[in-house]
Length: 204
View 1: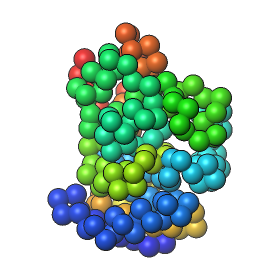
View 2 (view 1 turned 30 degrees about the horizontal axis):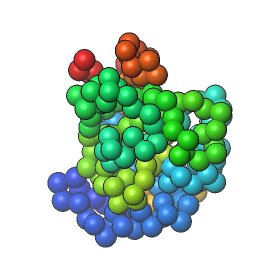
View 3 (view 1 turned 90 degrees about the vertical axis):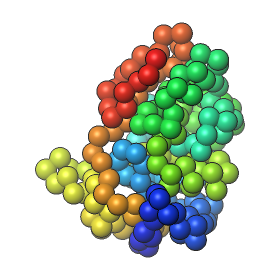
């Protein structure tokens, strides 16, 4: 596995381009967010999404799938965002939130049968830059880690060893965190519901 060190305050464009090329080729990468490190692939590549689901032992028909977007504008191409939901997203993003929204038909067939999609715009310039340069969202899911060995979840070198056989590269953005995002169900935007308390504190 390639390890590419990238700093938020001085992003190496060549490393970002290398990671985007992997995504375009259908590969899986690992990258930092404002919460946990994440496994990611091109959200429009059905085969890559299915690989991630197998790695995480996710049934996409029963589990919410999430995408990282570079902006609310990009998110609006893949999720239906009404005026109330837009205001909520605008007031809280970028940030450590996953907003569950009605899914658009522009998502690939692995989403078919799913009426919703989780939308993330993390407060992490590396993750945003990846989605921006890719030109479409990144399918994302947090890495697994053992509570007894927290270094597996936050230290890039340990993450690289654990996922060496499944990911093409990891972007080392420094020490990660172990608190997940706060998840808000916005399928009824008139009464958004927090369904998982996490790092983000919702501004309503």
